[in-house]
Length: 67
Image (cartoon, rainbow, N blue to C red; front, side, top):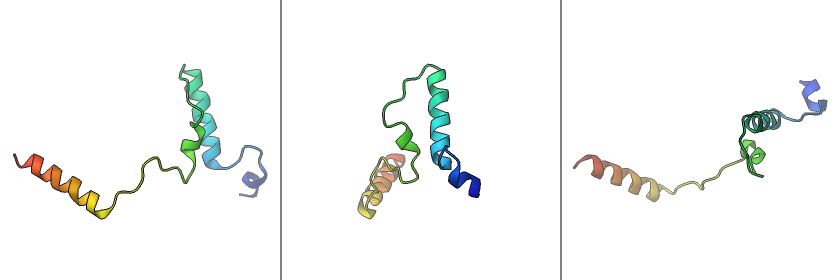
């Protein structure tokens, strides 16, 4: 474990992000500027839903299935 703390390539998420980005580029993709940030442990693109929003979605789903 001590090796990874002084190793120049950073933490696991950062190494995974770089490897994925280089693979994507090699295959012809053009990842955006925030591509590496998507691998951050704290990355959350959507806000959490409230209990009322969850209940409304479940009710809408149940109503749709009951047709």
